[in-house]
Length: 309
Image (tube, rainbow, N blue to C red):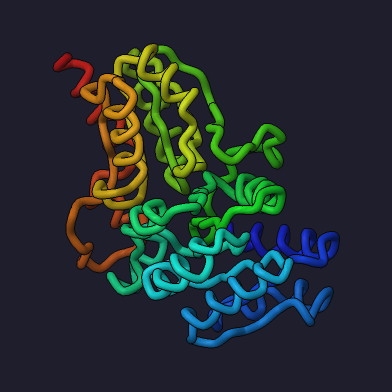
């Protein structure tokens, strides 16, 4: 995802003089092409992420479209006051871009894990929260972000995520989910880089006679209310899948929507990380297996729930 981001933001920067990239002392080689093309619109702000966010807000107030970029906890948790007060309060089009969301940096320990950021950012007024499902959705999200005027959080994985789409999805719209494959019994709503796990879960369920729809719910805020309305009326189970805490994340957002709109929240199964720091040593695949986030584990939970119904 990060390579797609760097390539797409370089192309957008060449065609849109408002685009500015601010880095928190990371990705310097990643942005070499951007710097070669528009050196006056790239700033390495050093390990001073709060200041970087304030600078971005100021640039946005003066007609630019700034994108801040660094590892997820350092561009979100560390900068919450500046995101809230400098960017969101003034409702300026500054975009916070995080790399390594969820457990992408699992091997570096809890300081680099990011399983609370959706909760933090979606609770801030005026913020969009976008979690692309693959590299093509990253490109589509960047294009869509430049067409609107709200502060936005773009939550990315790290690298080598499978590409689900064959090209940039032409029907990508902020706040509108993308149906990856159809189904009739359950719907698997995935946000962010859990999309491959959702697809695997659907394949596993199909082998057990369960037809599962797979959806990339790339926008957590605003939610796609039209899709949710139809889903709660049509499917036996609605499964939310995220590499994020069950507290305050995508599943919480859908549950809140269900309660507020009279939908049957008992249909929901929420897949996410527990209310605990992950302290074991291992990379992302190991962490997912330990926390029940793999495709076969998700399929097992869904099938068990259907059997109990």
